[in-house]
Length: 143
Image (tube, rainbow, N blue to C red):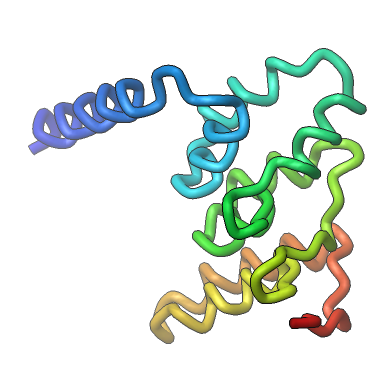
């Protein structure tokens, strides 16, 4: 049984490496946020030499819908990735995505609402980490 789990992890890692070969830093960042992949995120973050350059990258890298790294991490419940991103100096925590006018905190609440009652505690941790980092819970989405 343990061998099957290890084999699955190796296959998954190999597929991710194949899939991510040739991807831009922006694509790698957003993929790390979708999959809660801290190793990939660490690799992306290590490419930047200055904190200003890194902060600018993190604050401007978005997907086609205008969601930034924090939005995507919150949307997918990627606690560990959010923790790493929130530790970066200069990260804008109340940025608004284009489609619905949501902040990352809105995305986190939507994520929690999609969970079963048994999973609420896990989801609450996503909301808590964002509020602890200073997200404004009073912000109303402007669509």
